Image (cartoon, rainbow, N blue to C red; front, side, top):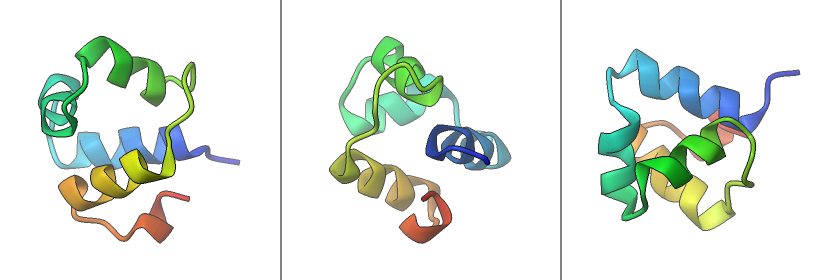
Length: 63
C-alpha cells in the first residue's frame, strides 16, 4: 500500500517542485519537510491540506 508521504512525493516530482520550494511555501524547513516525505515525521492534516493546494490536487488523492 502506498503511503501518504509517497503520494505527496509522487505529485511533487510530477510537478517539478523541489522539496525546498514546497517547504518554503509551507513555512517550514526543508529538513523537516524531507522528514515528512520520508515518513519519519507524521504529516498533520492541516499541513496535508496546504500541500494539496500547492500541488493542485484534491486531498483525497493524497490519503
